[in-house]
Image 1 (cartoon, rainbow, N blue to C red):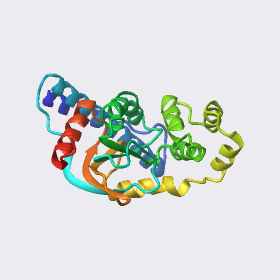
Image 2: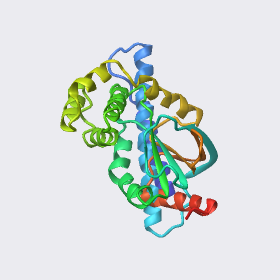
Image 3: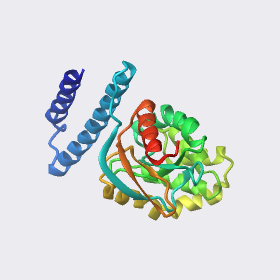
Length: 257
């Protein structure tokens, strides 16, 4: 299984690097092309790693938690949160509304995390925006979520953005605001003024400080009284079984089970 995965990753890398940009593109175009290809390669690798973990766990193989030994400290002040404020653990996610893997996580894994850990009071969940440079609509979508939050509908907009990720146009955002029953005039004014731009743009800097380079990325640690969470890093989209293993291990360590 591991040898097959390694061969697949190598093939992906060779195909990616061997395909030149069409036409006589200048150096800047070539750099941009390669940057996009590297992004897609990282996404494919994350998907393959997640598939391998799920396969091994499904076969009864005991797989180490999907974390690194390195810990990270990330700010959570001003960020939207779900669950009990005094839950034993806090899970901080850095993600983008334009990230395909993030949508996959929110469609398949997040509902299970919410049911078993967030709704039960064991985990507080915090969402941090991480719009990437090659995602032209990600920052606007994040701003839209916060503008909806100003009218008490952050999580409804959050869900709506992931549900129809293919349409993050200005018209698509406005349509969602109307469907959610928001004051569309206030919503449009909030978007136009980039009211939450500073909050959204804090995400990339804080993610970089934690050593994250892609989405989704997570920090899981004990809930603190202050505005920062220190915990283990979980890199990339993982199966629910992998998250469960990490969460249960952390709960046992702090005696919060």
